[in-house]
Amino acid sequence: MRADVHFHLLPGLDDGPATMEETVELARAALRDGTAIVVATPHVRRDFVTYPSGLPERVQEVRERLARERIELELHCGGELGHEMVARLEQRDLDTIAVGPAGARWILLEPPGQGRGEQLHEAADELRARGFGVVLAHPERSVPLMADDALGLRRELERGSLLQVNAWSLAGGHGAEAERMAIWLVGSGAVTALASDAHDVTRRGPELSVGLRRASWGLAPHRARMLTDAAPRALVRRGMPVAAHAA
Image (cartoon, rainbow, N blue to C red; front, side, top):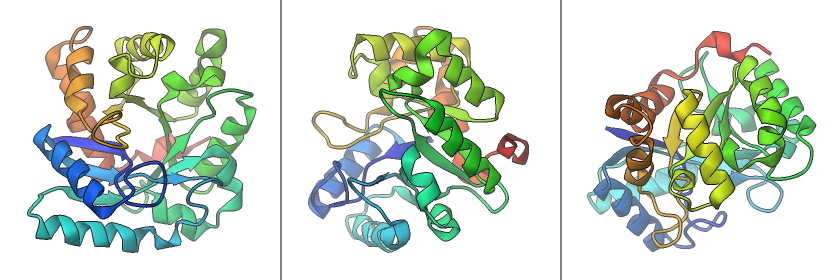
């Protein structure tokens, strides 16, 4: 049972599907590819969703529509949190986009693509101090994290952050450099989960199978499957260990 912890499924909120009909099409595509669990992760940042309070209601609307369409996709509320937003949000806002059971909840944190990485570390430390685990979204696409032999990334790993690599990065969909970094990270054993980061059914689809096939070139098949199945499913069901919250 595949689980996708980074998925832009909610309609009309960010650069994902614009309409409920597009959301339904995207959900069908995920189910066809073998994904059974999805965490809806709209962008929570200044240019999209600035206050997450309405997200649970939108998730419920999508659940009800999928049920009417007989699309058996287990849907959870989350968010892809821009690092610059952490200090702006109240505790209840962070809890709205956190995933996992009480005492082991985590947030998907989006690192900067360019620029300095210090603000990301400050944001991650603040999340941990406020009681949340940190899962870094597509670190292979972040120049600050991967610079200087991935010094910034190593710092986050030491502080307990987990890594989510994009399936399409492994397949070259985000450029040669992101592909190289993604392959290196997966091969190193540092990655906890592959995710689709799906936005639509044409350019950035929900095919976790793409990343699974590519990961299987460098890992034993059962280890590659853990990145799309057991490990992300455990993140949703059991959350992050309490020890991983310590800064």
